[in-house]
Amino acid sequence: MSIGPTGEIYRVDWLPGTDVLHGTCHCGAEHTAQDPVEMWEWMLGHPEGHRPPGPESRGDGS
View 1 (tube, helix red, strand yellow):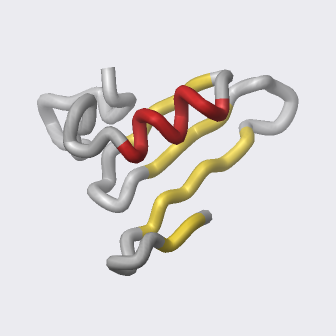
View 2 (cartoon, rainbow, N blue to C red):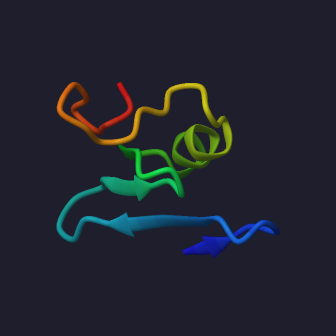
């Protein structure tokens, strides 16, 4: 977990038994990836690719 200079919280969890990372952005959007670089680019590319969870969103950032 990392807190940016503005107090934003970014969280990345490793899913045990897999090579998959699950990230949650400070906006509530979620994304999964196997590549840590891809995960951080997605998180820091705000708002591009970010859709906070909701009834019309799958929440995975795709």
